[in-house]
Image (cartoon, one colour):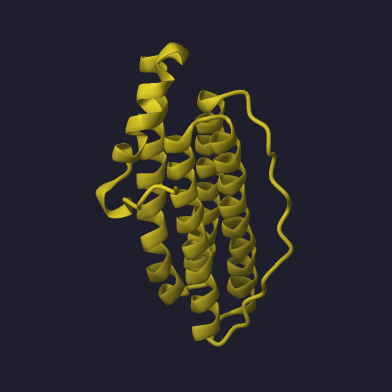
Length: 170
């Protein structure tokens, strides 16, 4: 049986993962409507991945005897200054999600909920990979500069981790 404290914090994470998906969709829309089809494809794939993270939490809560709650999700920002701005915002958001996952891990240990601790290890590893991936993209954006965004946009989908590769949105 899932303790109420754990159920509540995992339900909060459902909202955060849902917001992440919507945030990346909003960024993808901006990118696509500003001529960055590759960046949009990367962001659409990220949005789908965040939706899957949300579903993992929903299923986990329900399987442990709790009740997942699908929350209202705040509307994300829809305007960005450019590609570098988007990826800086992605990194900032991923660092926020990492802190949120770490908070759940800490509570699971405090509550001696080793099942939840074990479940969360996948997310701990995922967040490490997400942050590293976005940092690498930011480095590439800085290297190519604003004048060479065409090539960056064309090649961005190859920068995803092999397990996370997804077809670009058309």
